[in-house]
Length: 353
Image (cartoon, rainbow, N blue to C red):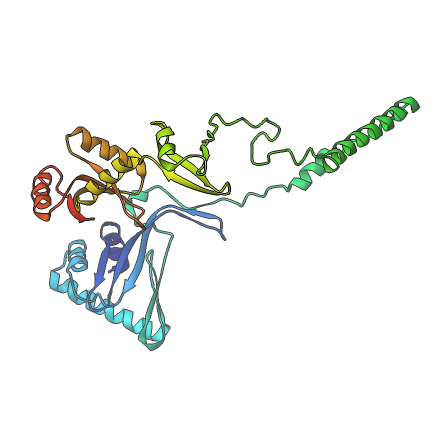
C-alpha cells in the first residue's frame, strides 16, 4: 500500500491529516512571497508542519485506505499500525524518513522530530495552475556611467569670443558715482548724531516723524479770589461769594492763605448713598462666573432684558466676574428667590458678599 499517496490526497482537501499512534500533518495558509536571495516568486500555498502530539485516530486515513483497497476498516487500521512500526524503525536506524511529495522527517536529539516540507507540490486548491518562477535581478546602470557615455563622443570647443575692454571713461564714472554714494551715506549718518534731530523723534510711535496731536481738553484754571482779612470781615466775604462759588481763599496778614469750602459736592452724596444701598444687599443669587468680561456683560444684558435686577460683582483677588440675578438683604429673601430662579436655571447658587 502506498500510504504517502493516501496522505497526500487527503492534504489537498483537509487541513489536518493524522497518522494514528505516530503524529499529524497540519496545514496553514501562506501568502505569496518573493525569495530575495534566489529571486523566486512563489504563489500562495499550504504550509505543512508535523505535530507528534496528534496521535488519536480520527478515522480519516483509515476510511480512505479501506475504500481505495477494498478492505475492512479494522484491516486498514492494522495496516496503518504496521506502517507506523516501519516509520519508527527507519527513523531509529537512518534518522530520517522521506514522505514522497510531502516532505522529509528527521529524527533529532532527545527523541525530537523535525519536518521539512517539499515545496514542489502546492496543496492549496485556489493556487491551481500557479507555479513558482525565477526572475533575475534588475541591474541598473549608475548615473555616472550614463553621463560618461553621453559625453564620450562629444568634443568641447573652446570659445573664441573675447571680453570687450571696458572704456576708461566708463570706469571713471563708476568710481565717481561710488564715491558720491559713500559721501551721501556718511552725511545722513553724521547729521542725526551731531544735531537735535534724534532727540525730537518719538520712538514709541509707529511714525516717529509725525507731529504730536494737541489734546482737545485743556484743564481750566480755577481762580480763587484772594481777600485780605484786614480789609473786610468774614461775613462780608461770604456775602460777596456768588451761588456758583464753592471755595473761598482768605489771606491773613498777606502771607497765610485759608481755603473755605462753601458748598458740598452733591454728586458725592448721591454716589455714597448708592454705595450704601448696594452694601446692604449681602446675599446674591449668582447665575454664572466668567473669566472673560465680554461674556459677563452679555449675560448681564440677557438677565436685565428678562426683567431681573441683575448686577456684576467683582471681588478683590478674583479673576472671575460674577453675574447676579439680584441682591437681597436677608438670607430668607435670597433663599426664596433662589428657589424660583432654579426653576429657570438649575445651577444657580447663593453667594454671600
